[in-house]
Image (cartoon, rainbow, N blue to C red; front, side, top):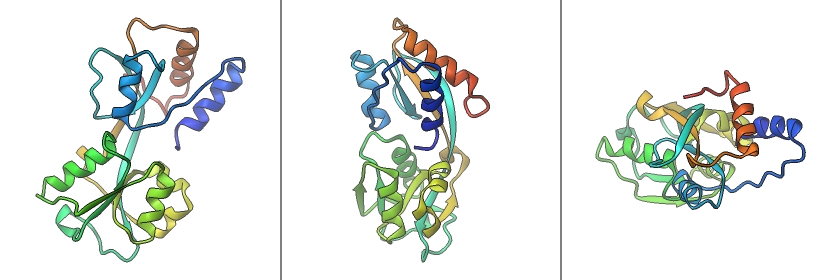
Length: 192
């Protein structure tokens, strides 16, 4: 949501004849189509199972916990009660990170509400429906981001790498051009 638009803009400016088709989904849902040769490559957030794929680190995200404005300060999972998690569907790496953090304090959500966009997730938290873990970069670009509290998460949960993954035997002009654009976009991107 925050990192890809400038990359795609630069890619299109350099390679206007290339038709880029995007497929969105959770990290878990995107790895299988790469293996199945349905898509050339995918941007996926750690943790994910990339067995048999080549990867390159491209973005470093900082996840924050967001709560409704009326919620008291959150320092640990124990500060959350009657918990509803607002998240993407199962397979979302950020959801797994949030659930692991909650589980470290033996806390489990009463309910999970699943949405397919960050705007909907942030909007539901702003409306008081629950809590979520979102990239700080996404929170800063949504208007509802001003209507929530954002709290830091432990570094082991908050630091999330996004990686480009592709099949080792697959090399195309379009994919190599994407890798070149990503490499040239440093310091926003970092090679592994």
